[in-house]
Image (cartoon, rainbow, N blue to C red; front, side, top):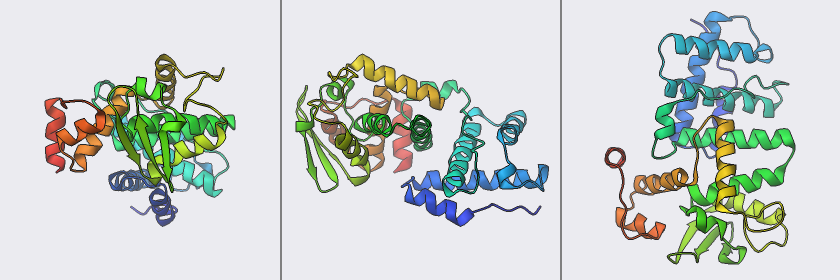
Length: 285
């Protein structure tokens, strides 16, 4: 059946510019190909600017009816939100039909040891949309920087709460984060990983602590966890600091670091992981 994946090449380039993981790009392109095939069959004459919330939810509901797993459907939702946000940024559509589209609750995802690349992408996208709707760049950069120190720095929540700007050394666009609470160590964030922390620094003003409350005081671990929970709920994800730290662990193991090396990065003596996670790591290598 004939169908047309509109702005195929431009969208793929957009994903690359957003530094999405290769697997995420492949997944999103595949899911949008499936969506446009469905669109050509069910709504063959519809234009891009006529696609509304009811259209995308119809697609999702049909996928659920034919027995797709919730995790699979959630991947489709992530791809749809990313694609239509791209069209909105490009000015092709005036309203984003997926702006209010949320992932479906999945108990397996909630109980998972770490956050997948696709879930990270969806979380970032949700935070960006939420901040845009509130026209609050400072909030966006603060939230992204907060996630950064767990996801790409592997910090404990107490370490993030006590992190000082004076403990961060900038080298070009990269950052070296010194951890002084607990076991002393240094975490290196590359340009991509440090960009939100840098943006947060530029607009945070003259503060001692990296993360502060509305009163300008150190943000407590409890407040941090509340922020993470709130952001996760908006994205339909179960997010907490330890799960993001676990994601840092898995990413480092995927990159080829040994368990002892990752333990050093975390400031612990021994890295103990669930058996199924080690099986994933072994399969990935």
